[in-house]
Amino acid sequence: MARFKSFPFLLLKIDAVIGVFQRNKCNTVGAKDWCFWWIWESQILYGGGWFSFVLCDVKWGIVLFSGFPEKIRVFDTTLRDGEQTPGVSLTPENKLRIAQRLDELGVDVIEAGFAAVSEGELEAVKLIADAGLQAEICSASRGVRGDIDAVARAGAESIHLIIPVSDLHIEEKLRKTRDQVLVIARDMVRYAKDCGLIVELSAEDATRADFEFLKRVFITGVEAGADRVVACDTVGVLTPERSYQFYGDLRKALDVPVVSVHCHNDFGMAVANTVAALSAGANQFHATINGLGERAGNASLEEIVVSLMTLYKLKLNIETEKLYGISQFVSRLTGVYVQPNKAIVGENAFTHESGIHTQGMLANPATYEPIAPELVGGTRRLASGKHSGSAGIKATLTDMGLAPSEEQMEDIFNRVKTVGDKGKIVTDADLLAIAESVLGLAKAKPIQLLEITVVSGNTVTPTASVRLKLSSNGNGKEVSGAAMGVGPVDAAINAVKKAIAEVEPILLEQYNVKAITGGTDAMVEVMVRMRKNGKAATAMGVREDIVMASMDAVIGCMNVLTTDYNKKIK
Ligand SMILES: [Zn+2]
Image 1 (cartoon, rainbow, N blue to C red):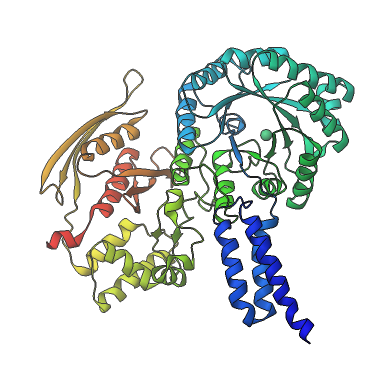
Image 2 (cartoon, rainbow, N blue to C red; image 1 turned 90 degrees about the horizontal axis):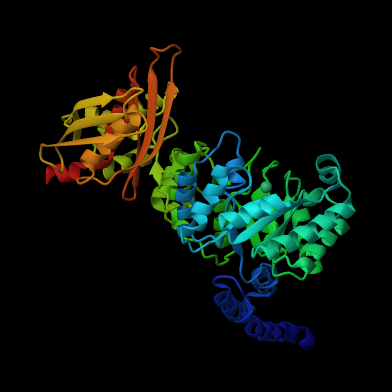
């Protein structure tokens, strides 16, 4: 009996010693504190028995035995693999604008393009390479001298040298043999090194290749001078378990500073596969903003980054609060819409409508949000609709400075439900209009459109001028603005933004348009989402004239964001 009693004590002491010893080896954020906490809790909970003791050990084991490397490098390929999304083609200037945002975000490498593809592409890589960014600028290349020359001409610092390694690709695409591929890998790595480039040797279709051959290609390349290797899951066939095994085996087999993972999302597992590879020791990942890429896309950068930092407590040098902004920016420049339910950066990622959820959210946002929206630069929004609860609607109205009585609240609530039941979206502007009508408030909007003129045509730059009346902050002041745009709608919105800029810094986050009926005289529905400081709102405009529908939506939304009945009373 005495021997059995002393056993946990003995274990505790051993664990405590190991805890102190391992403390300095922990590479995750907070892990060091965790180790101490564990030692402390083990001691305290000893009286609580074996169960607590085991629980502590399990938590600690997660930290101690995860194989995540000390430093994880972020290789962004939005401008190369991401740009290969069907229908996407960026101008060199727009590529540079995205590269600057990626640099501010803090990625280690920016793959700026495929220099040999066209003159324009070479120009883009050169423009970005010359921009003096912090990040390393890389260009993709096939295993041919002409491609490598183009990378060197563009002034990129590193080359992503892609060599196919599966028999399928070697025989059907290259029409070569494995031995010839080994020679190409060796010669092209040497050639690229001679050109003064940092070489990242990339094995295309690596996950469907013979593993022994893949290792031979990498070892040959590393012997020839390759600085890094990347194994590509080109058609996205890995599973997390296989990815862990595959990249773990590669890491063990190769003596090279960087082993990178590159996953595609054909089965929706690119992010999970990337994380699994990193947990097995890979120390760099390739990813794109919004998961852009051919077919089902690449692994999404924002999802990997936030998962690693939040779920695995790892440290990355990424300024996460810039993720939402860059996601919107890339979406706008590429024309590829971000699905509303997209993790981390989707419009609905921090939007709550159902009554049960909003009630929980109001008590404590952690009830239905795994991360705070501020972490990624997003905003929380309580939406109104048929699933709404009165608590959520009331909170939104309180935010606008409205305090309806219980009776009025019931009336507002029922009207919102009626609109929602008809299958219609209830925007924040709709909610405000309903509330104002129930409360019998005068409809003097903070911003009123007095006049708009738009000029467009084949020989003129679309231009617009507006005159607005500002009644809340401006005390009836009239402001005007004129601006150009890529089209009449853009010009009109720019003019409104310009007129209002000094008074209200409001950001247009999303603009969606659809024709409700067919024909050239169709009704057009414009939906916008805008943000002012930490507050987001939605509004809709429906008209036959797209410019006027856009004005209704934009000014309607601005009115929601600037309406504050508290201020009006004062
Ligand atoms: Zn790829």
